[in-house]
Every structure is written in C-alpha cells, then in structure tokens.
Image 1 (cartoon, rainbow, N blue to C red):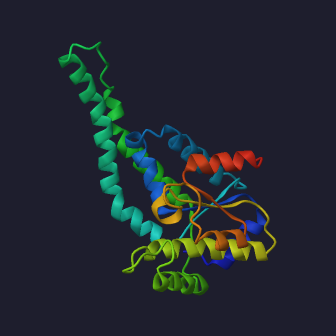
Image 2: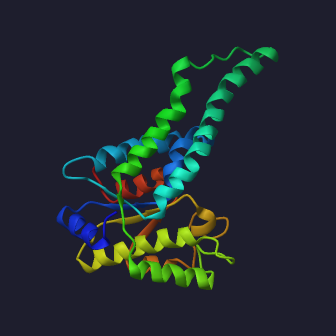
Length: 235
C-alpha cells in the first residue's frame, strides 16, 4: 500500500483525472450480464487502458478495505454471472417448448464469460493504487461510526464504507492543498449508503465534505466516464 502523500506526489507530477473506486464498482464488472449493463465492461476496459499508459491518462485509487472486500465477494459474484449466462440457454430451450420462434443457443466459448469478467475486474483492481491507512482519515471514519453518520449506520454497520469514503476525502484534500485542480471522482454504486433515499444524488450528510474539496460522485463506471467526457477528458 502507498501513503497518500506519495500518491499526491505522483499525481501532481503527472496530472490526470483521479477516480476512487469503491469495492462494489469492481464487482459490478462481473455482475454486468446479470444487471444488463454492458457499458460497464466497455468503460472498464477503457479505464484499464488509460491507467496503463505512460503517462497515465487517469489515476485509479482504492482504499485499504477494497482488496479484502473483493476477495470476500468475488466467488459469489462470479456465480451470479454464470447464472445469467446459463439463463440465456434456458430461454432458448423454453422458447422451443412453448412453440415460440427459435432462439439460438450461446456458443460454447461464451460460457467462459464469467471468468473473463472476473479477470477484467481483478486487472482493474491490480492497476489501482491502494492507499495506506491515514490517521486523519481513520479518525474521521471513527467519528462517522460513533455518530452513525452516512455511510455508517447504528450498530457499527458501514465501518468499511466509512474508511473507504474518508480516504477518498483525505486524498482529495491533500491533492487540492498541493495545487491539483483536476477532476477527483468517488465512484460507488452503493446508493443505499452514499446517496439520498430513492436517488442517485450524493447523500446530504456527505455533501459538505465533498463540496469542501470539489470531490464529485458517480454511481457507475459509465456515469464516471460521462462526467470525464463532459469535462474534455481524452482517454
């Protein structure tokens, strides 16, 4: 893991938009067939190419809990993808039984899709810089947990989300203090904890911290790409 101060040095030395990826965003890559979101795969590949360039045209950062959360949930997520793929062949069979127009079965190679998407998710995680624990960020995360302030909930729920969030805020703060004026974007599809109820807008309890350092919020990789494109980003 890398100290935030060292992350700041690298980014200010080679400016490009900064994306903080929540754990669920990486898992969403593998869930894309189940959730009918093919654009997430297109953008994931785009971001992976961008972060592998020299110089990078995007910086990807993750907080310390992200690797563990990915490891804990990737097998279940991959299974969800496999179910989605297999259901396509089930539909083909069912159409035949119901005397509907025939639907083609998937080619055998498509059955490896879940593994390929898992690899893409893993590659994107590996390409991201993992931020080391930061005392100020951890302190604010604890404050959120004690006060049950979003994304924390009563009973200590949301502790990892609080750590992830506060490291994004701290890194953005240090970048701004170092003179970085580019886009900083927190990306999480966990709207239950980061957005207002029934909305994709950032939760009101988080708005002050985000606004103070000009940190933006996106609910998917596709959403993040649209924000970057609107700002004139070139992959």
